[in-house]
Image (cartoon, rainbow, N blue to C red):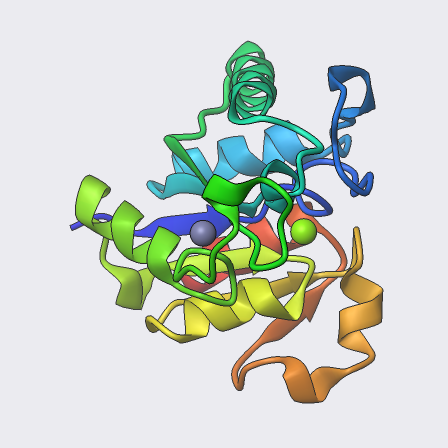
Length: 187
Ligand SMILES: [Mg+2]
Ligand SMILES: [Zn+2]
């Protein structure tokens, strides 16, 4: 079984921009490609897990989210890095698009995206990590035994200020580069 690093997307790999609805607004943090490459080299399977309530809200469609993920994958490949899989939750209980308006198990803090990835990619969750800028990223990992790392980019500083929401054992670091270094130290 393989070890994984689950990565949140917005505020962790790329800038948090509210609802990303145009590719021009997709801005990488300068260290993201290098950080992911070091995790690839460390033998980790890299899985993006992202809540995309903008789909249920009618702001973007699944086609656009797919296009954004291809853009991210291409940028990684150009820098010698690799994201092995992308999972997104299109749902939102108060959404405006009927077929996505549901209370699901995949929206973080739910852990269904991690469970699905583990089954699809033969992952050992107990030796895996999740990196994100919101408490709900870490909570989704905590529910299935995945250790969490909060980054201070995106909305991370805000959630660092309410530590009671963070699961026990959570680590807080500045950004994805520092998270990758910390994870490799544990390995
Ligand atoms: Mg985020
Ligand atoms: Zn969902």
